[in-house]
Length: 417
Image (spheres, rainbow, N blue to C red):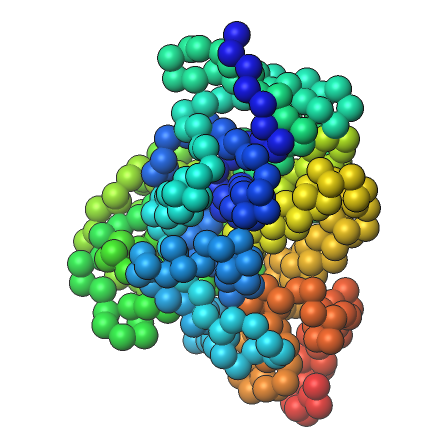
């Protein structure tokens, strides 16, 4: 059996793996990437947030993505009946990017992979991991290609960026109950030939049907649009088992977008993902680290997936460089604790979205500009900036502000928050 040697083996060629590969290659590290799929391939997670721009830039990938001409995203809008909450990233608290993109992930991921390949990194597509064996920090990974041929890669370290493939989580028994309650999602694309011009045809929107049920609309620069619903698992039982019929019935329940998509055919049979939240018992071990969705996925409501994927991929790559130089990084403090701070913030916001507390704040008719700016910074992904009270005090501040709003509604006296 053919055996190759690499300093670092990366499993997965999505955003997390490509950011890690680009950074390591730029540091002179010999990297090999294996990817089960053939690119371009469909993936969910199409709305980015500004913080991921920092990660792409540091990895040297930002300019390659800019050339594609994806639809720019300057904020987001939430609609519930006659209530509207709109956020402009340029008015957020603190520093950072005030725009990003909404992207067809097949094109976005392909752009990243092509750029990494052009820099000299080997990416082996259509190649699946069969088995991983560790001997201390060293590992031997057995692979199988599309022709059924086996090969092996001996590596000094493995970065598992396999996303929902969750290679090491499965092989090493690391799966854990998710932090967020069980939700599912159904989605597809349409070719929106009669899309409105201007803001209405460019701005991503989340229409809330009920506290726990919401719809997304993401318009892309290529004329396609992404449509999808997220809801508790029980909600989906109200609809036909056939995904296409179910999605058509769900679209009929919309208010703001009611009828807008009736004349469009689905570009592919609607996909359903059940129990979308994921978690693991640990993020690293001797000779390996988990990044992106292979580690944890919360919920798509605030589009944090790609941001956390690229942030974790970049941070993991930096610590792997230290590891290979025998500088002995403290993975618990420098990786787990750091990522956990950001994940905990977003977890609070996702949880309080579904309790309704965050929705009370977002849909307040006269929001405090200061509070709105601070929440906007969180929605932009700057969840490690503890100068922001809505980051530093996230566990209680959302609930406290929601209680003030409830008091305002009961008494008619405006809250001073």
